[in-house]
Image (cartoon, rainbow, N blue to C red; front, side, top):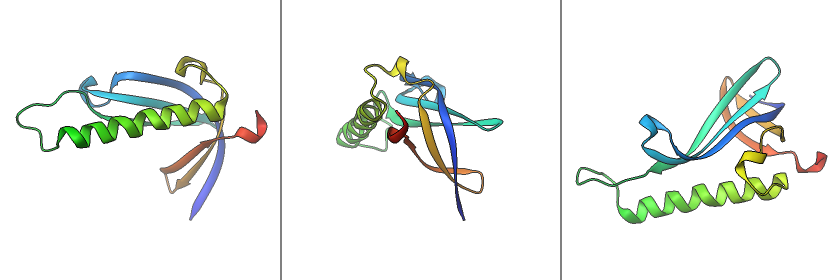
Length: 108
């Protein structure tokens, strides 16, 4: 069963992060009630001869990440990722797993 919780963006960054800081990613942490949760969107920043993905797949993931950041900034009415903390959000969970989240544009 899906449950929805109100929260706020606690922190947001765009740059090197993810696994061993080897990804170019949009990382976001949410605070809610008495806890928090985070998520990351991105892809490996560099390609090696051992990569099991193509440069086209990398470009698609980069495009998805930048479009998600753009849409988040637009919904939050912000210009820069550093301005996102404090933005109200709605988080949807199944058990303890974060399914989706959205900026609460209707309260801005």
